[in-house]
Image 1 (cartoon, rainbow, N blue to C red):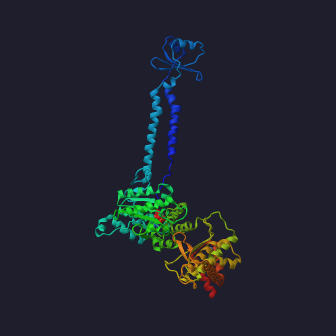
Image 2 (cartoon, rainbow, N blue to C red):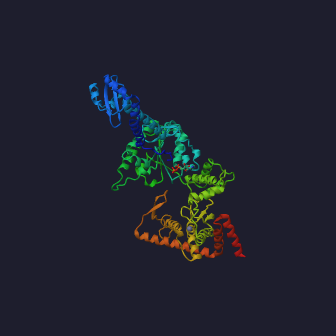
Image 3 (cartoon, rainbow, N blue to C red):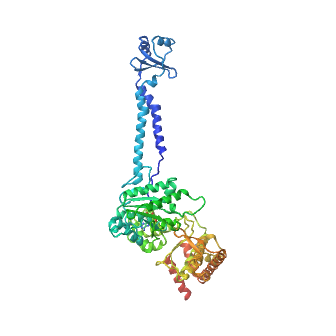
Length: 611
Ligand code: ADP
Ligand code: ZN
């Protein structure tokens, strides 16, 4: 969900302003206005009016050093005080009334106006202003909000932000499956006539940032129907105690607006498996139950299509995915090489690009990046171009921004000591050289040894020339050897080891473990799964499914496997010691080495050593 949320000013903010205005009025404006009605006269006039019995009420204000009085018509007068000991007696004789309430009653309807009518007007004004603001917030240009405070589902009356399938690059399979939905929304009768029913719910599953939200919006955009969207975590977090009511509300609105799309992002937040845990989340279960009830409640072909997105499909409650509910699942995977190139091009349209940018090269360099990351790469490149005072974005900007997005910004002031820099250079070249010497490993695209904000001291960009869908046992072993190559180089050259290999170690272990427990690549366990992946799209955590003894055996095998590859890497580097030195020296001096430079040094020295 990418709705831009305006920072909300709390209600109390507006009311305190109103209160402040009120207080100002009462303290300043009322007395001031009242004052203006008072006629200032001299003491002589006051005395003669007293003698003529013209005074109705009188109030002696010692502190202000003034006397207020009224005549028989109610006009208020004011005069300064003079030392006049007989005054009280004279006033008494003249039948004046010492009420002392002149100020309060001097303008009853004016003060009523000021202290009652005006505030009410102000409050109404603020109320209207705020509801207008809320309306805008809830929808944007072409939307409207239903029942303030009733439901925050955003309703996009026409297409949502005008996103079409063409805006979503790659993901052809997902688009194909969704085209059917669009067709159905355009022409439901075609389906009804034949008796075919559209699935009620479709689950978009895939890693974060692959365009699931975009696809859902695009379906609404293509079909030109309203788009309701809501995020699962919103249900849980924002509407404490009201989740079920919100679900009911959402469906009520959707049915009124059918045909339409209802999109629930992060459905796993409400749809998690209901396990009999102690102290389970009642609130969430009620919300989920309500969702299930609603889904069963609306009949097929009602025109409401539910789309939901998640990156933890395995954690969803089976009740949610059984037939008749979210029974269709569309994988939205990380883009492949072609997909990455297309996504880059789609986003590049929005910025000024130099003409000679090779997008396929950039796509190859950004292997494993998600759509969101690619969009980010383009943006970073544009920012870099601006920073360098250029009018358009060139290829170097893109190359640098890949590293920025994947490895973080260059740390400008983190200076490596010479010794450290040398170690890092050997370490990175160690990886690359082992990779290059094993025929099946991918060649390097570029190595840099500039420290990054992510904490990496060096960065090797490996490039897979084609797409790899299957990996052979040998390829995985080579990959492990490559991962150990950095440490191996340190051992050979410096005869000591550093902490710089922790990430390599983690990856190598993961791979080795997967070979044994999941890919059936060990001799002992044959095709028995010892582990299952618990979250495929987020890090790929696994849980063991074997006895403690087997576990110990697995651990031993993992160690053996990594050891063997580490030994292999060390051997490769020792055999190519001269190339290792030469390449590391180049990297140390230049801080960057491209794949081409690397290969030419490698090949040149091969020739020399052969001759
Ligand atoms: P998800 O919902 O899968 O986490 P989004 O749909 O919110 O991902 O995508 C986030 C951003 O990434 C989008 O706004 C878009 O800029 C970019 N993006 C992701 N996938 C694609 C794609 N296939 N084509 C174009 N842009 C994409
Ligand atoms: Zn390393």
